[in-house]
Picture (cartoon, rainbow, N blue to C red):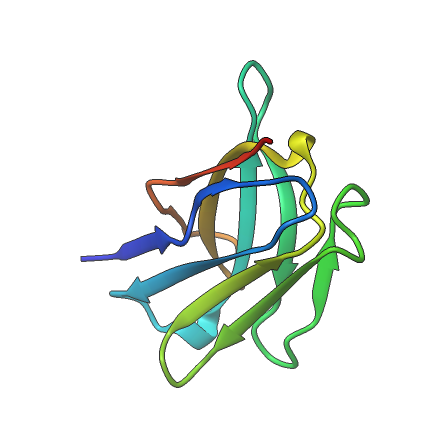
Amino acid sequence: QVQLVESGGGLVQPGGSLRLSCAVSGIIFNNYAMSWYRQAPGKERELAATITTVGGNTNYADSVKGRFTISRDKAENMVYLQMNSLKPEDTAVYYCNARHVWGNREYWGQGTQVTVSS
């Protein structure tokens, strides 16, 4: 059974930081690119950050570049999203995503709420 379980969301003040975690099980972790998506109220889900399998190359949405860092721990089958200098517009449900390198399989977590507000 494939499971992606996010944690680490919560309420934070503008300018603050949070680290999201995604525990992955049931797949061969190294065969999947890992991403964090987010969906704000009334908006479509958007890609925030991606990290590839081999080499760990990363890619970020322009809106989070320089503030967010995605990483993966191959030994623990974990993916992280370090979010710094948070802004109210970062408020969203954040989803962990695993996509097979061949593109034929994809899995989602249940999401974790991040709220940036004073």
